[in-house]
Length: 111
Length: 114
Image (tube, rainbow over all chains, first blue to last red; front, side, top):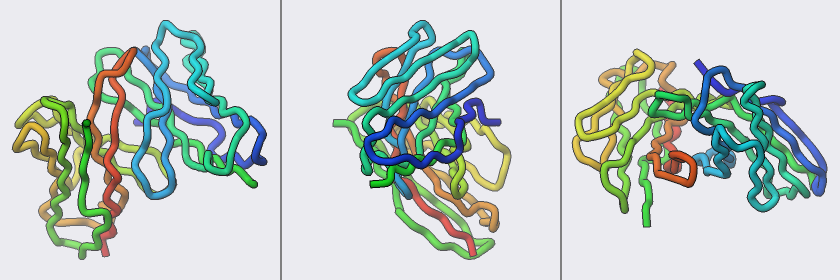
């Protein structure tokens, strides 16, 4: 079963606006990761946040983690058309040797 | 540098035919390797993972099998394909990042069973 569940399933915004995607999970985790997938391609690792971290930044990306609510959010600031892609959260659960991915959010940036 | 190769990029196979997808990794040794399947517009489903040569863990019992004959080679197989085996197959290996293991994915194989 899928561990992470992203919300919303699809998001369409204008270029320059901020995009926020959310992820919820069910079990205790070592870390949570976000990946990006361009249409028909493999996934690319964006950012990893450890269970003892609350916020992390990487360029225009900002990730937050609330372990008490078992949720995370990915914020992309000043969006660009090139940010159009699907975004997935993935959880590295305690005791597991694998990542479990959510269903993803399809983000469309309109020029 | 570390790279991952996956082929073929696309494949159209008739129902009942065999399947062999190959994934190889360069620039690292003893990687953890993974096969995922992605249905259209959906998330990734973990099929198999391997922590070493000959060590395969199956996540979902189905019409597929996996093998790891060499340290950096991971093969996904089927003896007889079903229509439901259609999908986008992704190979990945895990590497230690700051804070945990992250995955590097291959470019994927789009399989259509007809």
